[in-house]
Each structure stands twice: as structure tokens, then as C-alpha cells.
Image 1 (cartoon, helix red, strand yellow):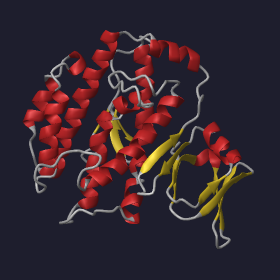
Image 2: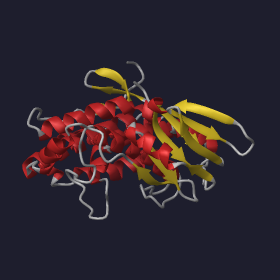
Image 3: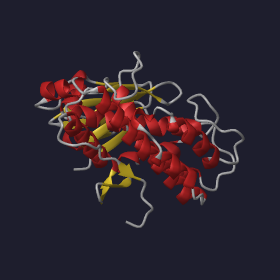
Length: 303
């Protein structure tokens, strides 16, 4: 079942009643949404108030709640502590994963990320990207030669050729701002799915920053990033000067990320369902049931 993404950009009081999220605005308008239908809530206004009962109900239904800072970029994420009946068993399988296994999983992750980047260049920049495909095929266990970085340097230069020496930088020039917003939403989707699959988002297969509570999410989202990149290229198509500030229209377009169509495991699927397939396959790798994580491919629109 597809879950709804609710975005709140104006002052509002959010409460819970009869298994409904109740929205009351300053002018007295009241709207409701069934809690069970909500997968993501984005809070993007300093004058939003929500009750603890509502927050608890959202988490009980495995809803990710994302807060935004004064610059309107996501800066916080609320997730349930437990949403899988076999969580302890799955934690143990994840903790006991061997280093060789994690290196093989990272190899697969980087390979699919580079292949998806190559597909975006083919579709949106009419770029054959044969070198990208060669780099993907050359990735070794653990990506010891850092093919990911080599491919990234080429990819960003070709993806935005009219911006001199463009680099992906959280604090860099536009469209880094759109990338930041899109990736934050994607990260929320992946975090939510990891928790639902009974895994610890903190314990990564490659990322291991001691200050990062979502290392595994950062690992798993890598092959999905080019899908977000493709959407952003489509949003900006025909615009000569990229926006310094995100507009409401930009945010509405980026909120479509959870329901974007992707190709995974031989079939078409909304991105949020595809992520669930990925995180489930990851656990099965930890458990010794599979040898490969199931990742998506960038669709070409033909299906």
C-alpha cells in the first residue's frame, strides 16, 4: 500500500482523534487524514504545534516525521524505536555480519549507483557514458580503488556542464539546494524502511562516521540518488539560472520522490516499495539467505 506524504508549510496545530491526524489552521479550518495512510510528515514552519499523542500514533504506524530548519531544509528525523516483531534477532544478524560480506555488499552498492548514474547521463544528457559502465564493472570488493569517487567527479561535471567545475557540496551553489532537499526526503524513506525491516540504521556496511546515526541509510540510498538527480534535472529543464531559494513548487515536485516509478527485481514499482524490497533483501543477506542486495534501476520511461 502506498503511503501519503503530508507537507505542512504554514502555521497549524496538529492533533490526534479517532485514529485521524487532525489539522487545524489559525483561520479555524479543520482537515483530517487517516493515520494508517500516512508514511511521511514534513514540518516546515516554526509555528507548527503537534501533540505528543499524535507523534506517538504516527510512530506506532511507522511514519517518518521530518522537521525543517529556518532555511526550510530538513534537519531532523523521528523514527519508531521498534516496528518489527523479530527486531532483536535481526539486530543480531546485522551485528554479526562479517567484514568480507559487508565489503561484497558495498561493491554491489557502488556498482549499481554508477550504473544508475550512467543511465541518467544517457537519458538526460545524451551521453553514452561508456566509461561509467566500465568503472562500474571494475569495482572490486569494498571498492578499494574508490571507483565511486572517480565516477562521481565525471558524473557531476557532465550532469551540469554549463556550471563551471560543478561539485556536489551540501553548501555549494544551486542546484545543490534542490539535491539537499531531495536527498533528505530519500533518506527518510530509507530510514523508515530499515526500521520496518528490523535493522539498525546506525550500523552501516561502509559509512561509519561516529557522529552519524544513519550510516546504513546512507549506504542503502546510494543507488537511489541518481533517481532523485533525474527528477531534479526534469524540474530544472529549460531554466537558465538555477534558483537560489526553493519555492513551494520545487518542494511539491520533490515530495513526489516516494512515489516515483523505478524498475526493481524485474518489475515496475513506486520508490517507497522498492526501498522496502532493498532493505528486506539486505536482511536476507545478513541472514545468509541471499548473496546480493536487490537494488533499483533508473527507468527510461518505457516500462
